[in-house]
Length: 478
Image 1 (cartoon, rainbow, N blue to C red):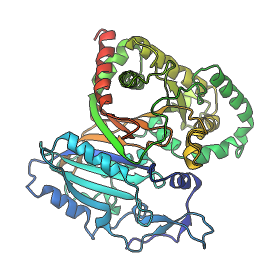
Image 2: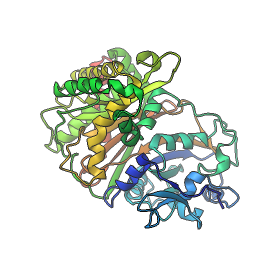
Image 3: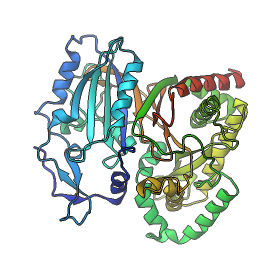
Image 4: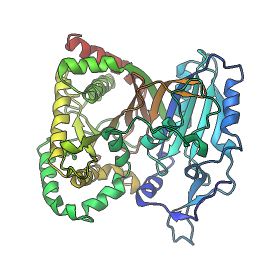
C-alpha cells in the first residue's frame, strides 16, 4: 500500500479545475502514444506489457493514489485523500481494436475514452494499452485530471520514464515509483514548456498576484491600463475585446472527437526560413487557414479574425528580469489568426504581426505583471464554466492553440520505439475546440480535441492543415 501524508486541503487552482467539472465538461487531459514493437517481440508482447504495468511488485507514486473528497466534517472544503482500496487493474486496462484496425478505429476509441468523467471516489487517472492495429503498432492512451497535473507536466512525466536505449527492458510504467529513479532529466526545459505549465495555475496564483500580494504589484494599475488600452484599440496583448462569436463558442455536450496527425518539422521550418517567421508562427498560420476553410465549409466564417490564446515564454534577456534572478517570464497572447484573409501569405503576415505585437507588449511588463495580466485576460474563460455562467460572460478568445517542444531524439519503452505522441486537451462550455501540438523526433504532432456535436466532422481540420501548409510552401516559393 502506498504511504501518503494525512489528508491535506486541495490548493485553489486545482480545486478550480475540480469544481468546474460537469457531465458535459470533464476536466482531464490526455495523451496518445504510438509504439512500434521491438524485433524480438512475441505474440504476447502487449499482454506482457500489461501484466508488468499492473504488477503488485511496483509501488505506485502518491500522485496516482489519491482522490478528492469533501464532507460535512471538512465544511465543504476539498481535500486529497489516499485511496485505501487502491485497485491498479481499475486504472490500467487492456483494449483491442475492432477490425480492420485502422488509425480511424484507434482515434474513435480515444474519442470515446476521453468523453467519460473520472470517478472522484478513485484516483483521477486511467491508462489503456491498445493492440489490434493492422500494422502491428501498439498504442497507449492515458488521461489524468487537470486538478492533479496539467497536460505538459503529464507529458514530461511520461517522457521521464522512457529511455533512449532500445535494448533496455524491465522498465516500469509512468505511475510506478521506480520508473523515474535514475532517469535523465527530460530534454524539454524551455521557456515555452514553462509557459504552458505555469499557465495551468494562472486562475489562482496569478490572480492573487494581480490583486497586489507582492511588492511588484505596485505597478499593476499602470500595466492594466496599458493592456486595456491595447485591447480597446484591437491591438494584440494579453486581453482581447474584439473576439467574434463562432460555432465553436457555444455550450458543449459530453461526447468528444479526437483527431491527430504528424507533419515534418523540416517542412514547417523551411517555410519559416523563407518568410522570416518562427515555427510557432507557421503552426498558428496553418491553424488559421484550416479553421477558415472549416468554417467556410459550414457557412460560418465571421468577418473579423478569430482569436486564439497562445501560451508564450520570454527568456530573461527579453523581459524585465534582473540578471541576478535569471529564469523566464511566462504569459499568454491573444493572437489573431488571420481568418479574414483569403491569401495564405497575407494570413501568415497577420499572424506574424499579431505575435510580434503581443510579445513586444509583454516585454514592456515585469514577469509578475505578465503573469497577472495574462490571468486577468483569461479570467472570463475560466470563470464562465466555474460559475456556470456560460453565455453571460463572453469568452476572450475563440480557442486555445499550444505548441510545446518535446524530445528531439528517439525514445523507447521496454524496447518498443515511440513513433507518435499526441496530446488530448479539454473543450469547455463556450470553447468547443482545442488544438495542442508537440514536437517529437523531427515531427510536429497535432492533437485536435473538440465537442463531437458542436464541432462536427472535426477530422476535416487535418485535411485543411495539410492544404494550408502546402499553400504556404507555394507562397514561399518552396
